[in-house]
Amino acid sequence: MSLLQSHVALTNTLRLPAQAQWYAAFDDIAQLPALLAEAAKHQAAITVLGEGSNVVLQRDVPGLVLQPKMRGMEIIQWQGSRALVECQAGESWDALVQWTLEQGLAGLENLSLIPGSVGAAPFQNIGAYGVELADRFDSLTACSLQDGQARQFSLEECQFSYRDSFFKTIEPGRWLISSVRLWLDREQAPVLGYADLASRYQALPQAQRNAAGLRQIVCDLRRSKLPDPAVLANAGSFFKNPQVSAEHYHTLQQRYPELVAYPQASGLYKLAAGWLIERAGWKGKRLADVGMHAQQALVLVNYGAASGADVLALAAQVRASVAAMFAVELEQEPIVLPRG
Image 1 (cartoon, rainbow, N blue to C red):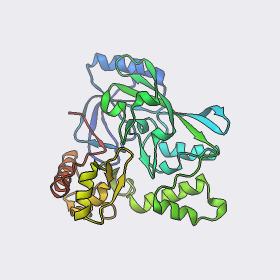
Image 2 (image 1 turned 180 degrees about the vertical axis):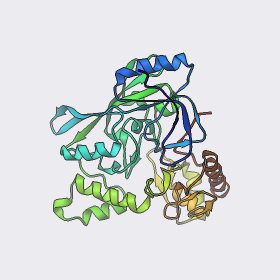
Image 3 (image 1 turned 60 degrees about the horizontal axis):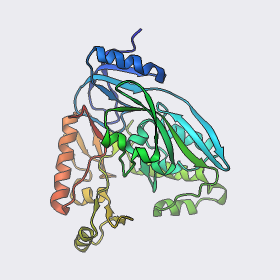
Image 4 (image 1 turned 120 degrees about the horizontal axis):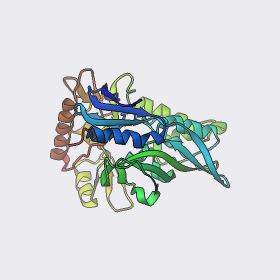
């Protein structure tokens, strides 16, 4: 029996209306070659979609949309206090964070409450509060969308950078990530590089100064700053924090002494995109059914009946305003589907 369905509505946290021409959810990676063969029969292009938390669906998606649903989390190796955890792509990322803490393993707590699936996490190299997926990464298994053959990718081969990877930029649309392996540690020291995180952590009772306590702080901070997609449709942070030269930073800093920026090891400065967007006058501004959130200017929200075209039009206006005011180009975080 074929797993393919036709004209299926796609779910995404921005709640943009779109259908897949063909759609298949599958819970066993062994089913992939047969699905690829069916797609070839229909001459259907293939798109992989996780939970849709970092996607702008600009219109209906032609071809076949594949949604991995493989489940399972396990510790596959120990090295002293360190454990190698393997997780299947269809698991919820935040469920993995919670599970690792239940095993007594630290390292992912700063990445708590990030929406999306485990398979999507390496694609984006998710990060928050001073930690990126790449910091805990060992390897992953991905299957070619041409023939279904599986291949293991090392940390180096994934070419992780800020909110980017080999799968997002170098060979987009060619691979389906099926499982991810991470190194975690019972003795991982807390990462407290953000002032609000550090102050809240130090205020905890001594018995709660652990990975679970830090996870709760991160969850509280995210809930206070970011709207719940179940309540107000959004895709989280919509723009990356741009990096500029030291010369450009110092020029801006003279004009805007309150500019929020972070020096990088490369010599560049990472600017807070939310600050730039707010200063450009977009915080809380609404155009019909889309707008930039009133509490966090970095978050683009859908107030009801917005389309993908509405979202992209607003994003273009925000980018133009920031470029005109600061001579800084903002780059969008969510990918746009269908591509092109």
